[in-house]
Length: 110
Image 1 (cartoon, rainbow, N blue to C red):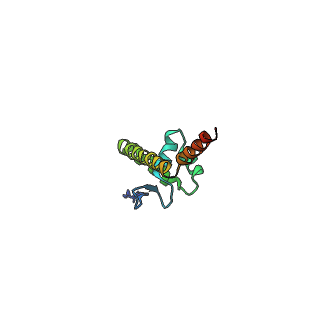
Image 2 (cartoon, rainbow, N blue to C red):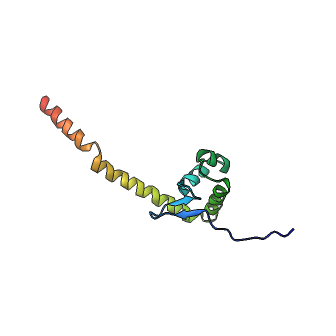
């Protein structure tokens, strides 16, 4: 039997927002890698995110292990962007203004 070794198409896809997704799912690479880094096995990750295919999950982890520095930087950048957005939303829609109004009203009452 002859085994043909072929280059396969990667199951990692970047969406229009720059988010990397695994397979034909909405599961992001950072979710898979964070679970892996917390000690989850590929089979456990597939149970956590049932849309994932086991082979695609192994591929994502293998890709991460071969490109650890780049993927860690990608994940860190995403976390920083999320933190910044969270702060902006808190300022824009947060409770700070309501809290100030309530404190002002309370000080007027006595």
